[in-house]
Image (cartoon, rainbow, N blue to C red; front, side, top):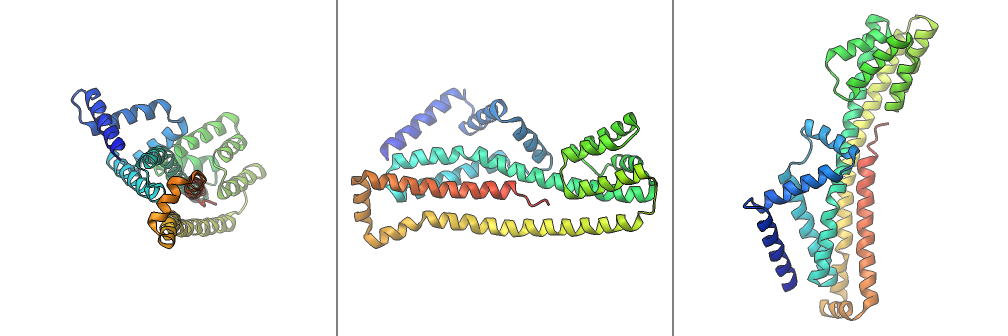
Length: 298
């Protein structure tokens, strides 16, 4: 424990000397930002910037609180397993290093949900505009000029319009949008409008009304799924943390002193405990990945 305290003090002094009078907190956050700008993948930067625009990205203060919570939890849990401050410190470093990955997963989920909502607006309003204009391209122009959409969907609609006028046909426009947004409701709407455009005008009021009803049902199911997944995610995290704490039950059964002696004198047991901790951590991380990537859009 003394070694860890000395290490932290030395780290504090070094950071303070390098900060040229700036607070250590600001120095650390500024350097983290520099590292992020240099090494973060382009996809992460895109989704993170969009999250910032929507006001859904964590502030530096929230990230700092997250780091503290993760560090404290990992130290306490690992210490209960090994009763070794140095080992716990290593686990703290590993745990905190996972925060950028968790931030990436979270931003991807927020961005995916945002895109789905934009696509829902695009499809619904295009159908409503078409019922008035009876032209797919004119409907796209109406949706684009309405100002109800945001980038990147808004820019993609402008590309669709330009392609349609350039080619004199909506085929390439539809292929472009289908490749960018592979959603069931997008493909169905585009297929219908492609048939209307190439086969001639016909009464499509009932078909379009049924399509709108299908979209409403789909969106309702998606939002219900989000609420269910959020509740399940909370229970999943609680269950994962409880698995860590099962070691306390073992210590109660065989007595804490006996447990500590076994850990300190048996290398095989130490390896087994590391495997248990890492396996449970992988279980939690996999659950986080599934929760944030499988947003249940369709």
